Length: 254
Length: 287
Image 1 (cartoon, helix red, strand yellow):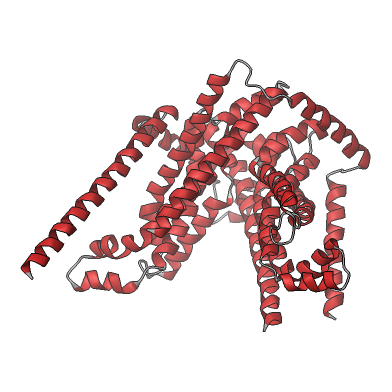
Image 2: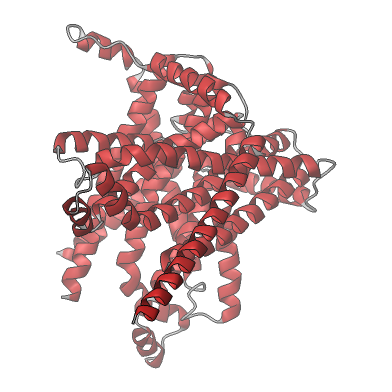
């Protein structure tokens, strides 16, 4: 019985895959021709070269990291005060908490590239739109994990502060935050890592950073320069990951 | 006695001062980084204060007019393109599914040579480098390249998602395999099985629940990714969204975004339920 159900599931999955392949028009000739063209592109990409723009590219890269940094900072600054609204041990009202948490999910459900498209159209092209686009979904993410960190905190320390005459605000400051801070900081660093990855492509829709240069090179068929930019992105992402992982490990141990 | 107390107190003051100094150092470093980033990102407080209301105004304009007494008609007007959008959303989900299955299959094949406990070290380092590359290049960059090679349309999107998924899942799958009990592989080998048979009958049955669960998690992520591929012409609902933003069709923007959110939420729920069933079945088997 259970075997036949597994088989049915497997067959259904394979059928759906075939429907998908048919729907996206993946004919063998198309794949073959595309692969040929792809091989030709890869040949064009070698050797990767910065052309005459090494300085511009490095500046654009710095702008990308700056966007990620400020986007994370903005998101954390907004998420910190509003996260208490979603924490069960701060806000008792279940309906309010539910609404707040669903709105966090809503902010997270839309990719930062969509926000970038919207903010470019709202505040103009440039890194500022990118910063806002990175910050918006992160507000949802950070507010959610912050409120979970606060919910996971020990109750007794808060009670201790209250019992020795502290106000509600002081209870949050001295009872909750010291417990939740390491988790929060490490989550912020993690967000910064992921934002560095996202920030590299926001430029494709005009929101600043290295993505703008990459999109341009691909549109203009400068494949060797495009390959150089991709390598630059890989190195930067790896470096940021490495640095952030080290800091996170130190935070957790402390 | 009093001597000890004074020493302890002095030591405590010393430590506190040192901690304060370290804290101040971090704060200074952080402030410097913020200033440099603000300079590079062309942002200052004035610009932020000026820009935020503009962004708010834009979002305000996308909010549709919905009145209680004519709610049906208003909703119908807001969702005028529902039929087209629903079809494109289905396409988006299909792109995500096809890409996840293709990428997951490739990831599964590559994950066995990438598992430290079962593969020779040269195979591990080669397959890990390949996976690392595929996972570090953003999906959208692959999409840009594939749109050029395979032409506009969802096929490029499927390939881009598949390649990135291969990198992301391959690493996770390899880690699941590494946690598998090596004795069952030894048994298969002792009975005359080849290395591939050892992987298929010794490792895969142990790691299948983990593999499926990670695959479903990735499907959730890929539905989100597939919704933006249209911005570079790689199919899905993103194309409609791009048009709506470019033509300043404000209510359309919010309509499409709400539909994307609903789709993402439905897929998340579905995947979460499937994942619980898989992991639940696993727990039963162990017990």
